[in-house]
Length: 143
Image (cartoon, rainbow, N blue to C red; front, side, top):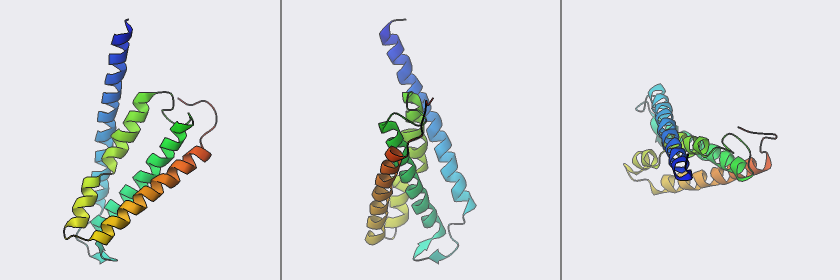
């Protein structure tokens, strides 16, 4: 098989992995939303739905940081397969955590301090996850 055909095949594997990962991430995010009644009161100025959005985005940023740290040192799931990294990173976690959900829940009505807090927290936990992932990468061969 010519190398250009192989290259095309691996590119389509990554596209398919992102598609499947995004489908599963979207289902996970939607499922969490169904578990929480978005109109059931507020805590610290945020509704239950807004807390779910904040929690999901924070957890996803941490998870992507950890995975990226593992991948940076050649460890963890997908360390040797680009399609696995594509499916987990931009696929699953990209769909599970969405900036659009954050934007919608925090800007209607506009609450600039909460928006800033979410951005700072998200970047912070992504950085922490990256450092943890690099430091505590799984040992041994990975698939």
